[in-house]
Length: 170
Image (spheres, rainbow, N blue to C red):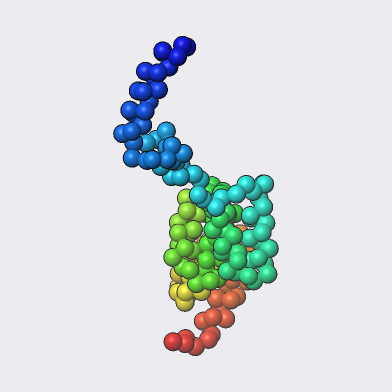
């Protein structure tokens, strides 16, 4: 391309750019907005395999429920179709008293694993923590009907029986 061909092209480009709202060409984006709006500002990092799930399980078993909740919250964002991530999220939310988040997790799980003893036990335990012993018993009994040899279910029913014996406190 000769110099005489380049001059009109450069002039046209300058006219087009003069209509832009930005004085800084580095701010331009192909989408018409500022370039920084296209940056990935999320805090999602690369996680190999199920690293977050393992970290969440370690924190939950160590009774660091706040840390577990935070880790599982990331896990459900990274693995949105993984029931292990959701059950960990809901259980840790229960343990820190975030029943709104726990309910969200159980709603998602209801579509994934509705008839599993793990799901039924966790929902029942959530109701137990909230003091709704009737609902807790209903879920524990459903889990027991599915798997009468499940030790978690047996323990939850025993815990429920012990809870009934204690006086309610305000």
